[in-house]
Image 1: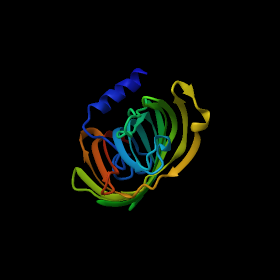
Image 2 (image 1 turned 90 degrees about the vertical axis):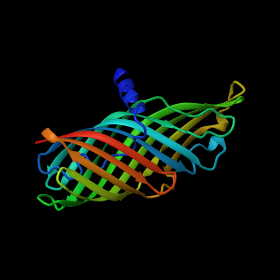
Image 3 (image 1 turned 60 degrees about the vertical axis):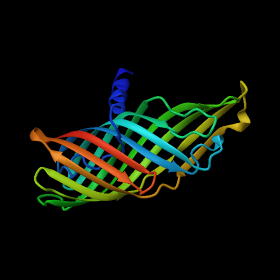
Length: 251
């Protein structure tokens, strides 16, 4: 619990952190390479089916996360990674009369892979990657008459295509990513202090019509194999993300 509170405190002190980093560092590590990355992030989504019990056709959703990611180079141009940390979920604009839904921080987990070409000794690299993140989120929205208690099994799958070019110690990269949201949502409804089982229930959801996001990122190589990396993404509307991280690449 202290570890989760500490990570949550760090995240709260950042102005706008988000997303899932492609850079860690941005080029694939190569055979037997290892990198450890501490990431802080926030993603902002707009969905059509996020919380129907509140009566809205669309909802804005934010997730914040602090993740420790281990990346392993299993071959030239092929990386895999595993991730563990903490995350939360909030609806920043509730309907009139309701309080804001915001979950407690809970354990988050995930992983992914990267395929890069060319594999080594070139100042540029084209990459195909995909990452997964999952966590449990529980919270409630309250009005004068109702209490809506909702539990999410929140999951994200994000395939991404990027291209980067190394300029000395800096490697900027650009790309496109497509966030796919899926999982389950279970809501219990209490009306005037009495549980209403028929008004809630459990549902599955997939995708929620997320638009592709353009991303821009950069990593900065420091002494002793350390990297500072940052990434922003946006669909041109209210779907966006921002991430920052500190990585160390080892051999």
